[in-house]
Length: 464
Length: 104
Image (cartoon, rainbow over all chains, first blue to last red; front, side, top):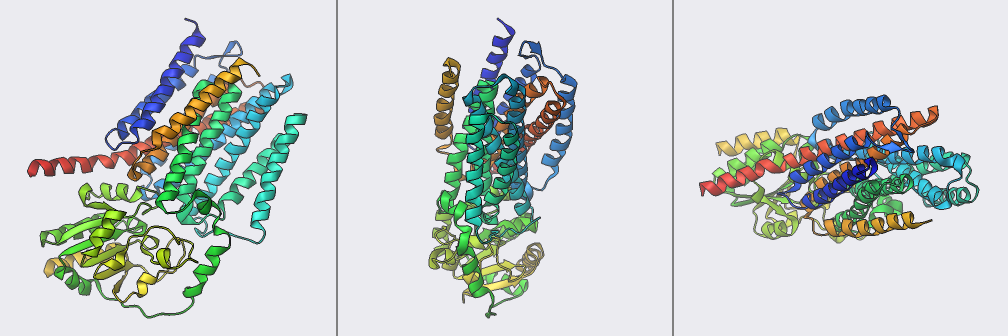
């Protein structure tokens, strides 16, 4: 068997592990094993590549390759291991972005290499698509990261003529591609790179912070497609298979995610124009009366309940209050009170994020109720405790057609007899929208840091 | 445009359908790990990065290739480690479940 055949066989093995891994990731039991299988397949593929002959000679610059890899490992492992679970989404964004950047660089470098030999038009097209998609993914992910990390505002960034500007950038990118296909000019490649970079930023800016997870999934899919394009250029089946798998599954996953928010993908990507600004400003200006109480007061209410539903949100994780929340639930249960957690599909910053955070705090799995089930439970609940959630319980999603989150399925906290709303201040939630639930006569606000408030509530409930 | 391109196109088509089929029935709890896991898988661009750096002729190609290998390594390693950490979180609760079942 020739060297080339053997390496390609190894690549075939790796591609198979990727398929098995994606399949495994779809079931809670096999997910972790699936991830390990893919990691093994990846390692084998990378190892085999060191022995590959390119254009009839062994790999050159092996020292440089190893050096770059060592630096990469030294940076990536501690970052991935040490970052807070709450910061997971932005970490996925950044790792996705660098992948897109790598794909764009591979396409550019390969094109420079073969440029002098006048490559066929279709090869140029593959290169240009790789550069365009990879770069959009790179710069778009960087902005997504900045939004989630709160380095910039999480609200949609809009300015007059934005749609026209984005449209023009898109047309410019297409124009460069067509011109390059005809002329093969190298200068335009750099122009395309610049335009793609700006396009990625411009595309992400108007998307609100709450929608960013859906966006990351889409950019993830883009990177997959960019990798597939590089695969065409390099003539690598492995890159084509892996890139396309991620690209195709990513687009479906993106649609599933937007569906979980009760919206179409187009609505997520383009709805920020106009609507958000009007709805946000309407009620925000005026001072309206709310009812608030101390943690000790509401503990009495909890002591009288027979059924409590907890509605956690991202703010819970930010306050690092998952563990004390579980403690409160346990104290209530020891008094014979039934406790459930109502998990909105997009609670946290990504679908399933809240499940991960609560699992970390050892909350029993069977107490976590998905939205539909939770809404039934709430009808018979005495108290609903909203901790760190806001947009996912906002009735505006049902009542106010002008609201940016109109149509999103919500957890109907107001079905319970009483609503306890634990909140740091009257500041609106991540999406920046006023919440009518705060002014509902059933609602009692408990101001303060979630961890602090919950600690006091635990102590008070214990005493009762 | 020859048989080779046609062969790649065939692989592309099949991969699209398999990719869609595979995630069609994933529970929403696993959307995040699935996204993160597939994020790691497109880190396979590292193989392509190694090839372009290993084939670089000019200084510019070397610099770009080096950057590509570096970024791709971040993608692969970071992707797998983050996914593993996420999925680790799903494990302890299963133990709890089992313990409770045993207790009952």
